[in-house]
Length: 202
Image (cartoon, rainbow, N blue to C red; front, side, top):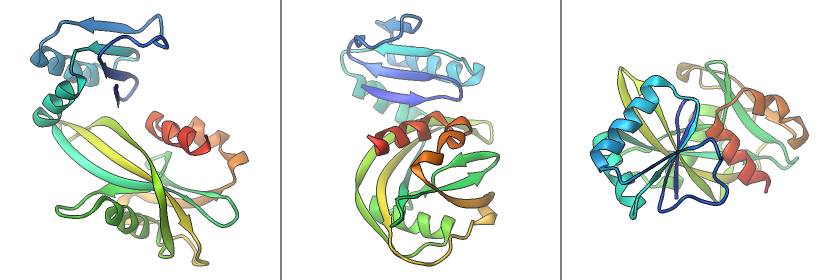
């Protein structure tokens, strides 16, 4: 099952309706790939606040079709933990976020993660521990719909240098938070970031 975050909702591409599906969820079956792509576009355009399941025998084919017909960006980022057990967040465009960025052509995912974390936060002594997850979300860029795949890693910081926000990327603040201090982050972040944090904490 593939989960795609929209501004106010979620679409799942799935072979079947899972037992955990919300009763209020929209379920669509026996749709062509073109119809499903149109639905995804409408979903983002109308900013629908609901959960939808698009049922198809081969959901990976649906995703591949959407991938090939919508501008697709691959990104890499990390949940950085220091030796005090604190997690690092950036504050960008009035939202708490995790550092991440676009993977350059020919660049390995892990290398992109470390480069973006250094650029956005000014940290160098970083070590990737393991893969956490991949998330998918959409947004508008110059009146075009973009589908972004972000690969997330758990990263350890062992240095003493101070984090510095990359202001040219609209990052106004970089801050470390203890796990017990994350409530206000959850209240002002994106659903995809909440998903990553939930996986990290479990």
